[in-house]
Length: 364
Image 1 (cartoon, helix red, strand yellow):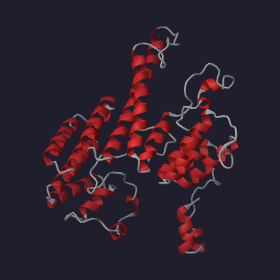
Image 2 (cartoon, rainbow, N blue to C red; image 1 turned 135 degrees about the vertical axis):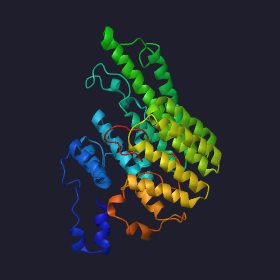
Image 3 (tube, helix red, strand yellow; image 1 turned 90 degrees about the vertical axis):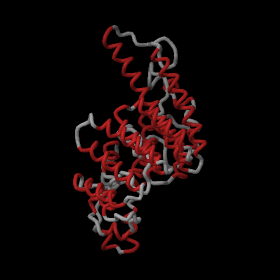
Image 4 (spheres, rainbow, N blue to C red; image 1 turned 120 degrees about the horizontal axis):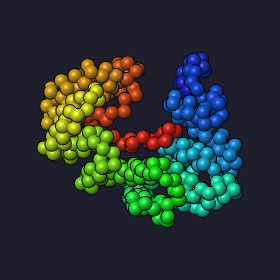
């Protein structure tokens, strides 16, 4: 349901609550199309409700626990979206309970070979790769980061093995490649497969780095972030900036300055506003780490001039002394600034959002 409307009903009454008109599970098409609408409007709870209805239509979902069922690619995609939304909402224990029937995601009925009449000729796991990542990451939100790291390491091992097989011209499972096309088409398939699994391996390394950062193992976290650059070279400026901010967090100003200088060199090759803002942001954070609040304020003000919708800079510029913004400060600023996801001065670390995944994914 709509949590905001529930609060309005409780504290402001029915008349005020009736004025809130947003999309809900009843007002959209009962399909993936409606689900995309709710997610694009950030109506997470309504999207969870709709996932439940769609899973019920697949013979799963509410009241079906313990009953025999057949999985499909659509039903598993729905489960992934629902579980990702639960994590997005911070309902980690609910997500863990709903993950339990899937075990370690390697049960026979989660493979195409289990349904030869439905998926003739198809092989491998039906489980979305991002669902495996979510299954591994969930434990760190439940206070078990070592368990998350262990699960991620298993996924990394599989990805590395598959990538090695592909680079040797074999199939993903190590057998003879089933690609019979000659010339350009067969070569394109192999290149696309290698690119896909390199991207997945980088995605796992990113999650491992975030987990190590949560465990405050900064040395290994930095090594892991460096390894991600190999798989996502286009994100090198963001990753180097994040490593520099980690150095600031642990008080290593000189190392942070070195990384920020590297970012400046990389962004010189890029066009557009994003690179300039990144360099200015790093300079502002560096001055904060040096207790030079006046200079930090100058940089934040400049960023705000270049990007007026950046809420982090707006609040930072209004507090040149480095004082933590209060709820009252947020009330005094326009509503349009509320959606910025950039980390603020109090938490200068690598953003926890991973590289883009499936279109329906609501990453924690």
